[in-house]
Length: 166
Image (cartoon, rainbow, N blue to C red; front, side, top):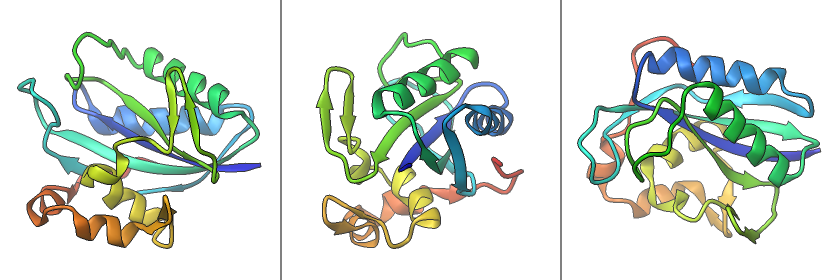
């Protein structure tokens, strides 16, 4: 079994219901066991396209799937939830990123692990720290990575008052 961490987010439709259903889809997938789910966080949109706020969460799993097969599963779940890739960093119903896959470093077409921008994004690090506070990324503690981000960026990641993701 490999431990992997996924980042989930979306800003179209019923965001909380979509995230909860996506986590249920992960739970139902062969070769995947969801072990921890962060609370939901509401965050400002990322990127140049005007759009509404996101809900984000992180999920820890144990899996017998290869990293590529796990990515394919995530892409299939996104598609089932109406994900369309029309504009980079544009609005979306669901985005599932493979953040970490054990201690593996992978650089293949379409698959880079650890996720290349995760250490720059409070909307990933804050929920990830909730479920894995002792995690290190590239040899750096997650708390240290969070401290390196601008305070305003960390403050923009607010625990959502609605229902939890799962």
